[in-house]
Amino acid sequence: MLARRLPSILPPLTIAEALETTKIYSVSGLLHASSALVTTRPFRAPHHSLSNAALVGGGSVPRPGEVSLAHNGVLFLDELPEFNRDALEVLRQPLEDRVVTIARVQASLQYPASFVLAAAMNPCVCGYYGDTFRQCTCPETVVRKYQRRISGPLLDRIDLHVEVARLSEDELVQHRDSEPSATVRARVCAAREVQRERFERRGIHCNAQMGPRDIREFCTVDGSVRELLRDAIQRLSLSARAYDRILKVARTIADLSGSSSIGADHVAEAIQYRTLDRKMLL
Image (cartoon, rainbow, N blue to C red; front, side, top):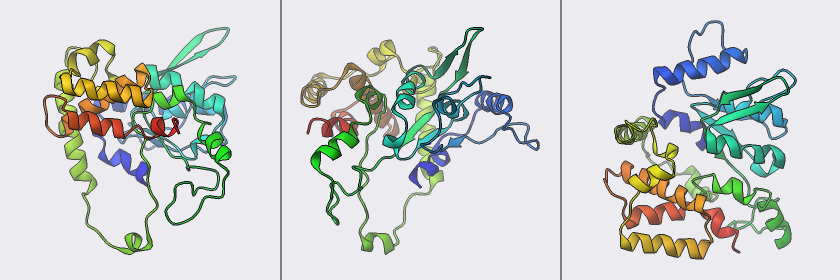
């Protein structure tokens, strides 16, 4: 449910993005006859039994896969550990380069694949590891084996790792007012506009697209924040890629709060979103 709400808080498609997305759906034969243009961000949620070619593209007659059909939108992978491990490892290229390259004897093809990856997984096979209401029945070795179906290099490329605890009966039946999607989207659009102006001469439009040089220029931190990052690297054994991801997330948190500089609170929050990095040390 949370994943399906993501497109509703993302900025509307620009004309250029709409044209890119329409081209992909047109060559895939998925553009409705009554629609000349795709005007909403795609949301793709393939089943974990799909083939590698269906996920990333390919086949005897190469076609775009789910990662390209999710271009400029959201790709949701439910039950992430159940996907074929080889297919998940192939995701590393589009997550890093935002394109998929399919090599054939006759030619090499590239499909765009700039998407938001949202994935969900149970904490263990039975689903109750760490649950406060029900006891897990899985042996510890089974829990670790299940969690490690997701490789470290793939986890490094996922910016946010968030645990979602099961709600109690009272929380389920209690009605509470919350922010509508339109309010959240307005905040996201304001932060995106700040980023668009920041990168106007760089050929990119958001923090997620920053390269190493951009990170050094736009994600500068002072001495105390640098010490906080150094401590996190030591305690969590973070890779260089995870370190860059933390800086990008911290920059985005600062943008959402209207801050021109990255503070200790922004970095601390970004570090808290590396849940699985912490669990892998247990």
